[in-house]
Length: 611
Image 1 (tube, rainbow, N blue to C red):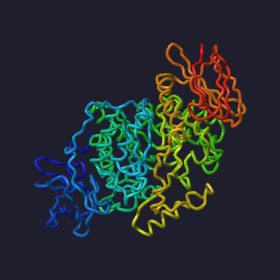
Image 2: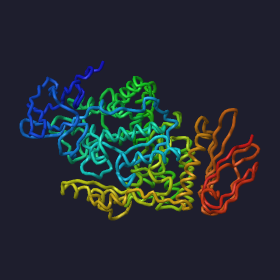
Image 3: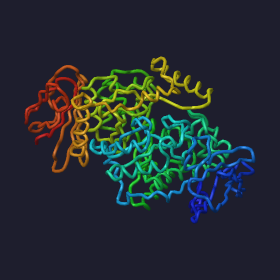
Image 4: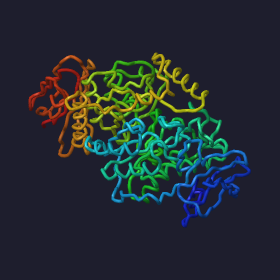
């Protein structure tokens, strides 16, 4: 039984109706907390009552949505609300009362979306458009719809310091970033997505908080020194008083689903979440979210980012797992990236053979208990028996692009033919695909790491940390994360006029997305092959009445004729990446019924296997 009944300890400000709001904050470190309401005539201090659990509460009449306030801790420190819904003046400014009932949703007919039907499009709000706001992002939704995207994934939108940041330095996890437009504009964006039949996934960060504007230390034991993360002390999920921290985080997940109608939550870097309690925080969080989803009568998917290759994250409870809907799989990215680029630095040393791609397609994880030369130990366990769509895969994402020294995309590393090859592998994989904004037209602008801090010592620490991070890759100096130019250089150009290579690449992405519905969804992965010279791979899908579809991918830059491994009475291709529809190239297709296919260079061909 939940020890926190009803709304008794919900964090933040709760509308009681008739201009009455309940203010509640957990501050066990404090002996006294006062509510400081700010008005045109000055500030009003209101005393708050403390209960045995360390919660301070007060109910105030005559407050309206938009009112600004601080909490005064022990008569000395003015601090924003840890559960603030909006920070109009940034992380150091006053919190703002938000009445969720003020927004009138228009998506009442939205029924949600199954994970298997999702194609994620990861976007950073600040660099996705020139405007860098939720409102300007909403104008791109019709484009995503035409392309074939079914789920817009937003990098973290919780309040971070300054106006430019990836979002993983957020410090107020309930507040919607002010420079993006705040909570009302986020709701409008999600409403527009649902109107166009597109789901929304929000990236949430529960493994750490950023350093600037992080005032939780003043309130209570939100962190523990039992464990150390790359970002400092770990969030307190199993130490003393952790019940209240867990409540704070779980209610945040429910908040995004209930108040913002999110269809999925992507949990950042769960390998940085430490919990050795009897019920893991991931298990409890997912259980609560699924309970809310049942109440709302629509699916809500909790997806973890993890580099652990641990199937327990997505295994059902009856198999000893946490039951999450899915998890990211870096192995697919690394396998494809190393074969297409030839890079072997850092963790890429574990990959580089076409057999790695075969294993990623067929089994899910490449490292499923096998020895990892980079880690110098065995790594991972098997997900081979689980539904393929539970793994979210990519050929580019914010980490794999932005955590390069210069933020160079795949388009800066390989030519158009290899980008087309990557597109075919991604979108015809049995796993759930994720595109990183702009990759569908070969965006050349980098996606670099940028911040907007105000503390000179913190800025210097970030700059030095980035240099150390890239030592293993030998990438040398990096762009200054604090420079506004680094941020502006990272904005999408949206430059792919008709007839340009990017235009043809975007057509291919659209065709592949439509083809995915035909040959991947509803069919099962059959056999997977590779040739002994590591020049090509092939795999098949088997559908109803034993219908069969084949995919052949060549990695050779030289022209070659590939004898198909599918058997049957021949192969009838209906998509070839070298076709003139995808650019001004000469292509020689296999004849209908032939058992061979010609590749003028690297690329992919898809067709029906005749029985």
